[in-house]
Length: 621
Figure 1 (cartoon, helix red, strand yellow):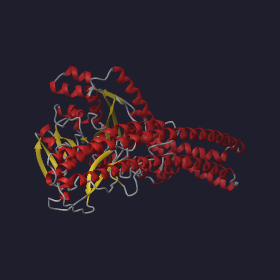
Figure 2 (tube, rainbow, N blue to C red; figure 1 turned 45 degrees about the horizontal axis):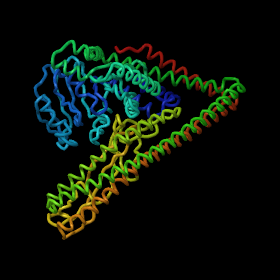
Figure 3 (cartoon, helix red, strand yellow; figure 1 turned 120 degrees about the horizontal axis):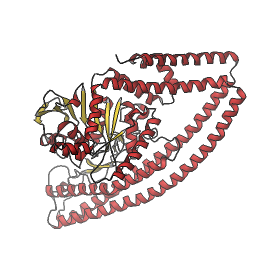
Figure 4 (tube, rainbow, N blue to C red; figure 1 turned 90 degrees about the vertical axis):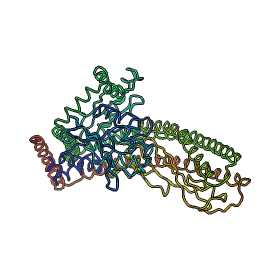
């Protein structure tokens, strides 16, 4: 089978005739080749931040709270859980510079390195943490990996998840009951699923979720997964969801409550994983084989259509295609009308959200000024103390703005995704992308940034992307306000920058962070009585630049989306016209040309038959 997917004829035929785009095909072939050649099987646990990934791994492999669990952003460093004959009491902490340290194999020991609070944005330079456990689930070359959540707020965390995804052979997708799979979740699944040999879907049921909610969530999630499998030409054998109450499973494991474990659904899922692991090479072989067959069937269908175009009755074929054109034009017209309706709705919602952005920043500016005024009136008028007060307050206001705007953006993107699903055949996945995923060309996500911005992170909302667009203003997180007023040493003033990542929902997570940039120097001699005159203009300018950048990013997102949809319609029209042109060319071939064309098509069909026979006779040895 390895020889088959590297066969020059196989590659030529499927590249030419499959309905998949070339980069999707390239990604599939590369993943199949990789997994058929490997002796190890890596299984990252994937899902949105806070879905319960660390808790699930604790229940499956640790029997206790070893991997830190927190409602905030917890896992900022990948943790690899590897087989060992004896569960070791210490873990290896590998650093980017090659150093290895030991720490205790418990929540306190790991928290120092993997928790965002203790190691913000990985300032300690940790590459990964390796935990060694004697678990049946880790035998036969299997490694589980706890990764930062999809939709993580940290740029480095998104990149970490994507780097591991490129080398993963399987995955556990932990999805939610409420809300069920969202548009942003489905984008990540669409990107990741086709390049994995085996996937498991687990729906986490929280204690306060009713059986009716679980069923509704399950029905929705199954429909979404079936749709994704169909679109990506994936075998439907993986379209299955196990329900696990993750919280109940870990608490029952710690309390040695067998009844609770059975009720949580963990034992059933654990047995399922264990069965797979005992013969994972055979399972992977079958999965790859089934998906190659699907690819060949898709390719064969296209070849048969090509053959039909020159062998069918000419007049009959023309009539059929004329009917197709009428149907296409009707469908095209209806779809465009639907798009105009959607566009109008989005423009209206954009105006409402823009007003909310303006209001939020205005309120934040006034609060910022009032808090500064209070501190100045207390006598904090210059020096390091004023630096700290200023920067702390600015940081606090940026976070408040984020917390206020983020849910509004999530609602907007959710509606946008829901609207776009009404456009037949329009694929958000193929239309918007961030270019740093490193999977393959057409399954990447192009950067939707203002000029000069750079893509810095991964997938959407479930890949949780991060886009950076630096701006220049005058009130930085690192601005030396005290120095500007004239007491402390160092630069007299500093410019401000605000990182505003604005690729939301279907593209990623909306984030705010803070950085400083050197700028104009302003030496100001006056102190307490002039402090307000200096700082208030800085705050005013900061708020103006902040709102300007948020609005610009938001407008750019909408503008680029509309451009992509317009391009989609242009391409649809162009493709139909091209197919019609090719048909007419085939119909108008002279007899010799037709004979040669039919001969070549039949040769390729014979090759397809040969490929089928190879698969039919192939075994895993």
